[in-house]
Amino acid sequence: MSVAFHAPPRRILVRGVNWLGDAVMTTPALLRLREQFPAAHIALFGPEKLDALWHHHPAVTESLTFLPGESVWAAGQRLRAGKFDLALVLPNSPRSALEVFLAGIPQRVGYARPWRNFFLTRTIATRPGAVKMCKRSEPEIRRLVSQPPGPPPAVIPPAAHQTREYLHLAAALGARAEPLAPQLIVSPEELALAREKFNLAALAGPIFGLNPGAEYGPAKRWPVAKFIAAAKEIRQRTNCVWLLLGGKSDQALTRQIADALHDPRFTTLDLAGQTTLSELMALLKLCRVLLTNDTGPMHVAAAVGTPVVVPFGSTSPELTGPGLPGDPRHQLLKGDAPCSPCFLRECPIDFRCLNHLSVEQIVTAVQRTVA
Image (cartoon, rainbow, N blue to C red):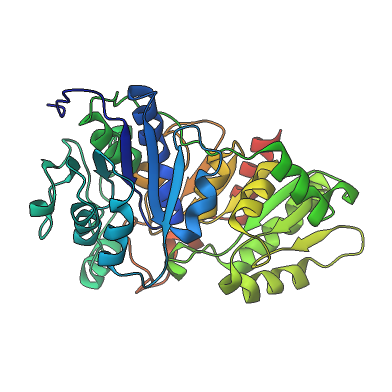
């Protein structure tokens, strides 16, 4: 049952999530919310590091940000000045519910979770069909890999995807719950600035992106030697220009790849740690394809319209894959390890889930994507 309104809300605050990939996966819910309340002022409240996502987004009227270390009391006081009449709380944390409570927003909607229900005026039960991402223990992993091969695991349906969790919350406000592809907007001006700043007009050959890092941990990273081998082979076959992308923490990794790819016949630009989020969005949109681990830029690329090729190991493309589940533009590859997905940061055994994905499989997937 959806929330009943005496009159359509005029000022809506959406408490956004805190991580890049998760934020992209909330955009279908934001679009449905805008569809339901076309005249409303919709403000997105989230971390400053994600502010650029919302600058041109058609669902968001205003982006409000909090700084690292800002107290919940200070955040609530600032939000009180916005005189919002409805808050939709997307994260499951107690703090996010407390913020909108302290802001004095009269209607506050979010999932029912421990230590926060008091702060909400309407709590939403866990969605039917939701699949919890449970980490496997090391004994369970060793037991699974030591057993003879059994029947294939049950197929996780598209309705289990994380985007549906946020759509379900929007539906509690009367919005449609039908899935949409995540969407981000890059303006023509931002594309032009990126081309100029990074001198892309001078490049010969199609631009391909390579994002070899993953903040969550090494269990999500395809081995760097395989990235290098695949990048070399793809370049030989396509004459592409590689843009190496990532954050400051990925610079040692991309420097290693750039050194290995050095060849006077080809161009490789190592831009890891050198871009703002808006510049990263523009560069990803300018790429013909992004070869990437399961990480935030994967979701950004798909949301700006760029196909992605992704080796999946410790995580599940059925639950957190890029774009709309089943979109044929994206190539999501999985190994056949019986312990995958384990959702661990580090592999406690031999990393077979990603080691089993060959260079040729990735090369073929990239070629199929850009053909």
